Image (cartoon, rainbow, N blue to C red; front, top):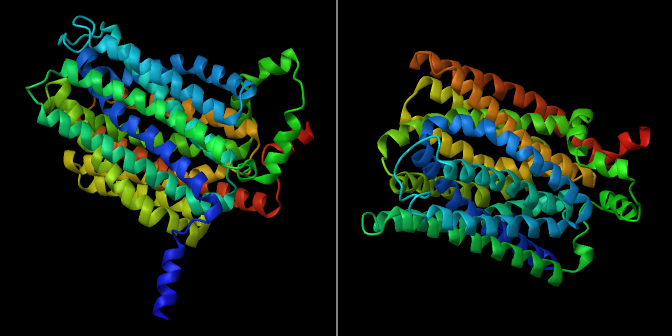
Length: 468
């Protein structure tokens, strides 16, 4: 009896022999990409705050929308022109080279970190923030779009937790190394040397991620890369079709049109909006506190590196001991409710105990659960969809939608600047609470539609084309 119980527990983390190579390379690719993110994200916040000013972060989030829209349209064209894995190559190589360019700019004695004057006219800070926004916006999109296209719902339930665990390991190592390096060399090596070199390391991690995907394509047999079979067969037929000039132009904004027309995709768009607005509200309060305490770019980077280290450590525990077992035991539909319910509880807690340490703890917990559990669970929603939804609509949802939400959250923060601290705090938290309730309602609709689609072996997105 006891041995059977142990075997049942072990089965929660078992990987079939034929899928091990595929799971390894996808996990390792995500590890390298998120390791880069764990280095670059603290640099984005701290460098912008010390070059331009932390009070301009809400403005930067709003302006980044105008920068990202052309990128999303171009990405949508790449979806038509390139194969699935080649999109990952483009993302990794573009941002890897961009990281090298900003390495030289930030190391410059006038344009870079060595110049300690904080001013909204520091263009290097603005362009660096927009570059990092494009990296943040497309990282999850390109990886999960590819993963969703080469895995079926059963594979996702069994193995997505391993992808996230790999990413958490990479994030912990890189964020921990960044924190220890800055702390150890504090005062001995200038920020103008340490921080640009940290940026350069991130570029090499992205080049490694591109190599990992190349090895995946070369070493894993093609019949293990089909994903959801009904969607695969549809896309296989479409590859033979030629598009007119009008269809090509329409394809660049097709993702946005799909979101508007398809209630299922609009529901995914909505839950991302809800989460991002809540996070922006919490994030801004933590940033303003940290910026007032840590006076240099290096010390602020170390603070955020420690924050990301803690966040990813919590995320690793959740992804390894929670994500895979919960998805396998409870299934996708029930699992979708877990995060919005936790989010509601966290917001209630901050309403009752509104302090800087509680806000930091809430932010760490929400981000950790989102990346470790909510994100891979949400990604399963894309599996029974066609390629246009997986890549084009997803790009508009993840990149543009999340930035729209951050812009809305930033506008909300800006609107409360003149209010009393207590009123601003309670208004923000009450608004967040309302969003979490709406989130739960939308999740019910999404889970129901997902289950019906899988049961009937249909493909979301194709029914509208058939009707038209």
